[in-house]
Length: 313
Ligand code: ADP
Image (cartoon, rainbow, N blue to C red; front, side, top):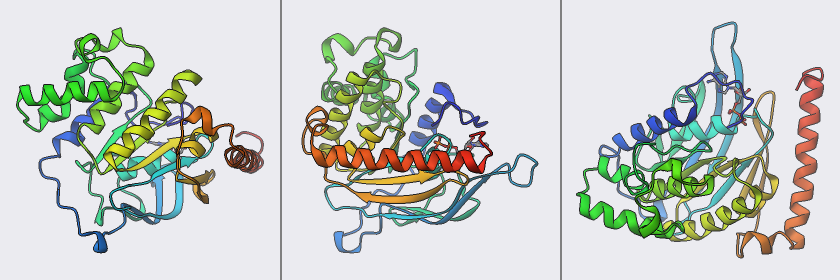
């Protein structure tokens, strides 16, 4: 989600928390059965999707145009797919269309399907982690992490036991940190809480919108390692929006490159999985080669956009 996108939707932590609440509230009605492996529909499919904001008004704006891609539902594994591109190319729009969140949902043209069903709104099969710290300020870490379980009606003792497990899994100290409030945590710790709160619900699809964008570089690498470790455990499909080339290459089994004006996919790259910690991988030749060529591609995209906008991009 770009800071300079000038978006008019209800952004920010409180709105994001409401999104999460809305998401969880719909859990009960959501389908749970997984199709047999042979008949699995794709995890996510976009077919010729265009999103126009402010359609029919003088402020009408084509955010993404004719976007098509398929992400397979890789059995017992999942994939991490990075969406990389300059600010304003529509990365968050794509992610929020998958989440079924308004005003991105519904698309103006085309079809978005998740696990074979057309997206009709938020659902329990999808969990979201935002860049902004989306914890509820008046709840402890434990009560934030277990918020979704509480909405699902899980008894307190059971959800607290599971919550403490997840607090440990994301690298926090269950004894020291569980009773803290969000204002007592660092940025990295708060993102650990956000990740625990999403993954504890075991969504099949995890949508992450620049979740580490506000963290310092060292914490960011630690969080990338943590995500890879947890992802191996939850075996979900992850859509990860970033404008850091290094982050996209490290995390992505697949990297979608997006360009602006209008937002569209211009590259779809398959890369080796994150098989070692981020700090180790960063010195490997394949990593550096891919980072260099993607930096060059993004620079070309940015200068094309500047030319198109008469130097105003
Ligand atoms: P990114 O995540 O790549 O920065 P976004 O998906 O946030 O891009 O935005 C794509 C374009 O659509 C931007 O130009 C942004 O200003 C515009 N946009 C995003 N949300 C809205 C909205 N709710 N209303 C109008 N324009 C929007």
